[in-house]
Image 1 (tube, rainbow, N blue to C red):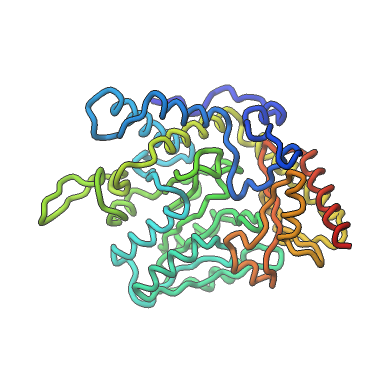
Image 2 (tube, rainbow, N blue to C red):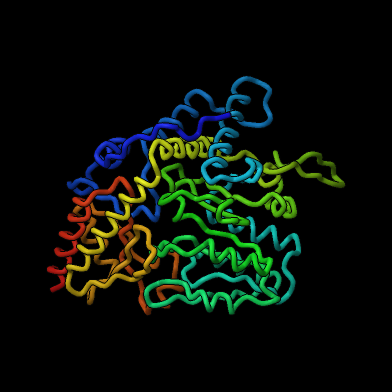
Length: 416
């Protein structure tokens, strides 16, 4: 059994943590990098970089097929990473962990496979919300293009919270699935997922959770949530790009046909018929991102050094500090003021386009995201073309937030 969670946790100290992330030491445009785009992707600790380098330097081989040492060793590392994920989210079995490219592919896998399973009938409905990432909208529209599936949308309040009364009223005999984001990447809203799941399950409706933004901020327990599906991306939790996870309950994954066909997902192949392998390999066609899975395992090991509550509390402290400092700026409005919120702040400044904000402060090495953040329906909801977004992680500091404020004051002076 792999020791995935250390008994003695490392004391959290932000200055020590920053030393673990080499990119935070670099300069951009002559200034020290201030990286505040963690909702898009997180930076990687040296431990993850070393794991990738070590695999390609010493252990590179294809998996599951070879009988020689390197292949067997690479296979062991890949499957060990699956076990680490299983422990990390408290799944019942490692076979419930499907490696994919990221959250987007995980949702596409479910949408496509359920369509092939003929789970949906003409006129069936999928409930989503007004705060979904495009990756939790477009796949259902594509599936609906093959067979008429209607999307029902949970509205949000001006503060960026889900209208749960409206949610309950949307459920009817045609509802076949609820697919909902755990934390909004644009608003930072932490949705009451357990309550959403309980309401759906009372009507025997399964729930898919987009956990891309939640997984880096706090401990996720899929059994406690009673999630039917849970999707997340490795690069959001300090791991490599191109690797992600779909968790699914065994009975649902066994019901679903393969998402893709090819090598490694078969049991037998003839020209007349193919039979498929057991979970999880049924959904992992072809050579997978072996290094990515190993790197994801290393990222989980890195996080497991700490008490996740310490990291969460520190991020909340940063969120409160950044919110207060931003509101000192005349004409600045924060979009999304939910009571339960993660360290993501979207904002606009009167008379200044978000693109101008992002471009100008970049000259001082400050990296924030500007645009619609792959959530155009949210922008339409607030009648905005775009927002500026600062998203924080536990390696950020109050001094970096102060630099952001100085940069925004500089922007205001330029447009005065």
